[in-house]
Length: 494
Ligand code: FAD
Image (cartoon, rainbow, N blue to C red):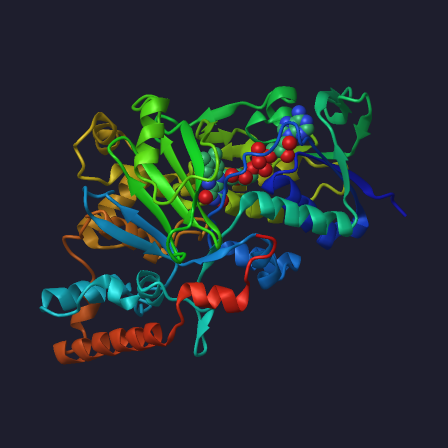
C-alpha cells in the first residue's frame, strides 16, 4: 500500500487551522499532516464577520454549531447594514435573506416595481424576513418550518485556537517555530522547510497559509501578485476592540466616512471595530482619529494597524505548493468574503488533491476556478464604492468616476435600463444581493419586466399584502437576538 502523503501546512491562522482540520477529518487516513506556526510571528487576528456558506462548510467537516459559537463568543449575522454609501445619511441592509417570491420568468423586485407604479407595495425591505428581523434585533435559527439564512460574528483568535485543539486531537502534528528557509529539489518543488532551531520539515505537498507574507508561494516560488488597487484602493486598516454597550445586533455595520469606511462587529462580550482606508486619501493619524471619534464603548485593546494590497496571486497552486488564505490574495473586508474564500479553496483542494505524480492539470483547474471566483467577488465589492452619489471628498470623486471592469459596467447598465439582475458566475451573490446593493445605493431601473402586469392589479395587491403580513407575523414571533444567544450558545471562558 502507498505510504501516506506527507502534507505540510505553513502557518496557523484561520487559513492554516481550517485547512488542517478539514483535511484531517475528511482525508486523514491518506495524509500525514504537520502544521508549522510561530507564536512569535502571530496571526492577523481579524476576520470576525462571515457569510452563510460557513454553515454549510462546518456541516461538511463536522463542526457543531453550538459548540463552535460558545467557544468563539459568536453572535448571529443576518446581513450588513451600510450607512452613508449612496449618499451621506442614507442606510440600507444587504441581508442574507430572500426577498419576496420570484417567478421563473421575473424577479420579485420587478413585481414590486409594478406595485409601486400602481401606488402600493411599501418598501422592498418589507418582503425580506432576515432583513426585518435584523432591524428589529430579533433572531432564531428558524421560524415555524422556515430556516433563516444566517452567518456568524466570531472572535478570530478563539476560532483558530478552537480549530487547533480539534485538529491536534484528530491527529495533526503541530510544530512551533519560525520558518527560516524553504528548500527546493531539482524540479523546483518544495522539499522542506528549515526551522529556526535547525530542524527540517520534509513534505510531499505544502500549503502556504503564512498570510500576507506568502513565504512559500511568493518569496520562494516567485509567483507574482496581480495588484487591484486601481479598483480597490484601500491598503490599510486599523482595528480596535471596545466594550459592548448594547445588546448585540444581528448584523455587521459598514459605516462610510468621507475618506474611509468603518466596521462594527458585535460579539457576545465585546465589539470588534476597524477602519479601512487608502494611504492615498487618508493618513494613519487621520484614520486613527476618525475611528476613535466614531466608537461607542471604551476601548479594551490597543489600536493595531494592518497593511495590505488588494489583488490575487497569479497562481494559487504552483509546483507542489497551494496557497490558501491571505497568501493567495485579499479583497478588502467590505463583504466579509475572506473566510469564505478559504473554505472554497479547501473544498477545491479536496476535490483536486494531488494524490498522483501528474498534477499539472489539477493545478491549472484549481487556478482557473480561483481566478474566476475572486474576479466575481471583486466586481461586487467595487460596486459599493463606485455606485455612489457622494461628491464630498477626493476619495468619493475617485471611486464615482473611475473606470470599472467591463463585466460590472454591463451588469449595472442592464439593471439601470431593464431592471434585469442575475446571479454571479460562482453563485455566491444571488440576484437579491445585487438588487439590494444596487437599489440601496440609488440605482433604480428605468424599465422592468412586464410580469407584474399579467395579474389584475387587485390580485397583485393582495399577494403583496399577504407576503408582508407573513413576514411581520414571523418577526413578531421571534425572540430578541441576545436572548436567543443566551439560550442557544452562551460564550465559554469569558
Ligand atoms: P494569518 O492570520 O496572518 O496567519 C499567518 C500564519 O502564518 C500565522 O500562524 C503565522 O504565525 C504564520 N507564519 C508567518 N510567517 C511565519 C514564519 N516565518 N514561520 C512560521 N510561521 C509563520 N475575513 C473575513 O472573512 N471576514 C472579515 O470580517 C475580515 N476582516 C478583515 C479585516 C482586515 C483589516 C483584514 C486585513 C482581513 C480581514 N479578513 C476578514 C481576512 C481574514 O482575517 C483572513 O482571511 C484570515 O484571518 C486568514 O488569515 P491567514 O490565516 O491567511 O493569515
